[in-house]
Amino acid sequence: MSRPPVVTDIDRQRAIDQKPATWDADVLARWQAIPEAQRPEAPLAWENHVAEQVERFEAQLAYDRKPAAEWSGLWRRWWWPKADPAVLHPREAPHVPHPYAKAGDPVWPAVLAVLTPSERQIAERFGVAQFKPSDPRASVIGGAAYG
Image (cartoon, rainbow, N blue to C red; front, side):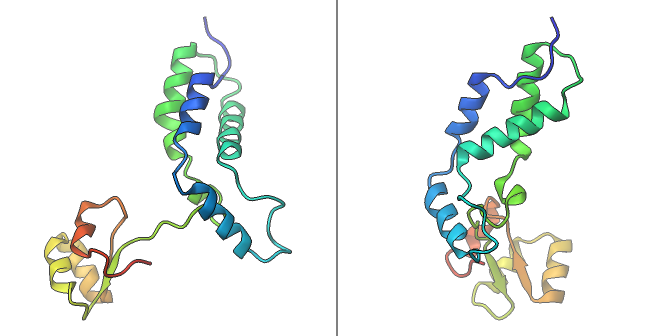
C-alpha cells in the first residue's frame, strides 16, 4: 500500500541518537559568539535540527506515493546523510577543524609525499595543503596545525 512520505519513529530516534558528543557545548559557544542583534532566540538543539529535516523531507516529497519501507530507505540512505548541520546552519553548528600544512612547515615533505600528483601540484602552487578531518592521510600532519 502506498502512502505519502512519513519518517517513522524508529528513523527519527536513530537520527536523534546520532547527536555528536560535543554538540551542546560547541553550539552554545558559537551561538554566544554571534552578535546579540543577529543571533536567533535560542541555540540550535539537535532535536530541532532532526525535526526540521523531517519536515523538509515530508514537504518536498509530499505528492509521491511509496510503501513505508521505501520511505524509510530514502530517509536513511539519501536524505539524512546529506543533512549536515554545518552546511544548513553554518553560524550555529560546531566548528570542525581541518588539518593543514604550509610550505616550510617541518611536516611539508611528508604531506607532499601522500598527495596525489594533481593535489601535489596545487599544494606546491599555493603553498598549503588541507585535508578533510576524516581523511586518513591527515595523520601525517598530526597535531601540527588545524584551522
